[in-house]
Image (cartoon, rainbow, N blue to C red; front, side, top):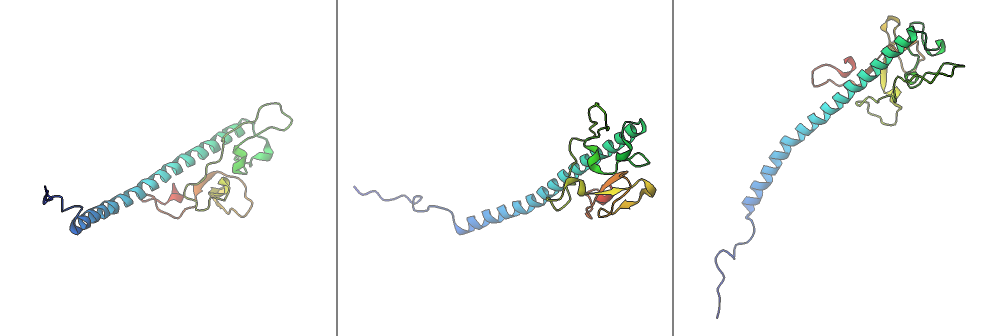
Length: 165
């Protein structure tokens, strides 16, 4: 008994045209998904930047308030009551005091748009001095730190440069 194969069993697999259509559809989907993932990644970094700016600025304000109350040693603050370095916000101890240190920040957040991950977090920020609100040159010793800003030259998704946030 000889069984002949059915006409359907002889055609196995996909035709070349079907493969081309499938690959072109996958390429089209990938070209749509990649820009969206880049945008989502950028928006996540922007959210991190907002949070870091808020956290450091609140710590600077708290430092100023504690300075006005006389709880900050004069050697750690400027005449205007602002810290001389960002690292001062991590712990302030009064000399010859048994009081616990005052912590304004647990850690200094890194600017998410700063390109070099080997730089210390406190050096990833631009710093403004209270005196005439001048921008501090990071390579020069400065008076105090009144405000911080991102050093990035990029423009945010809202159309405002990150250094102006």
